[in-house]
Image (cartoon, rainbow, N blue to C red; front, side, top):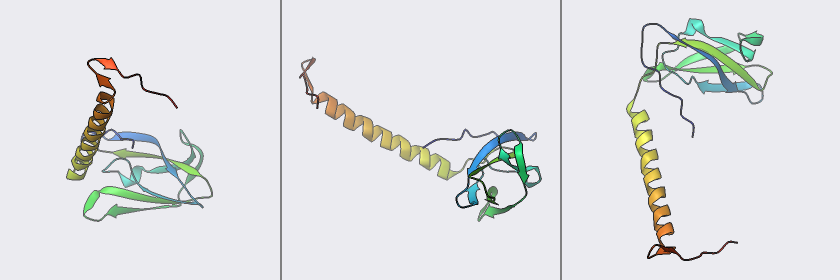
Amino acid sequence: MGFVPKLNRRTTPYVIYDEVLTLKDGVGEAQFAHDNVRAESIEVWTGPGKTGVRLFTYTLREVPDQPWKTIIRVTAPVDRVYLTYETTGDQVEADDVNMLQTLLEELQQALAAHERDSSSHIADFRVDGGTFV
């Protein structure tokens, strides 16, 4: 799982360039990677760096109970589009922290399992030799 770095809130907007949205059968829908998107700043292009054709065949909607999140739905006869927009930064929610905690717990469990497996091959600081298949 990849993480998108969070942006601190500020009054001067950040400009996000070339956020990729993949389309399947001419339709793509996703939540923007960042919160508090300024709807009037959104540009959708068929090529990176504001190249190709600028598209206006998209709709926006808010996530229920989270008005700082925006979902975009694009229809176009292409495989991917590139989104450029302005945001004043991200909201940090309990869901964000809970996801990190869950991933840390899974990492701790994986490390503990690896340590148990590794220590079964080491006795008195000597490796048992092991085998390769």
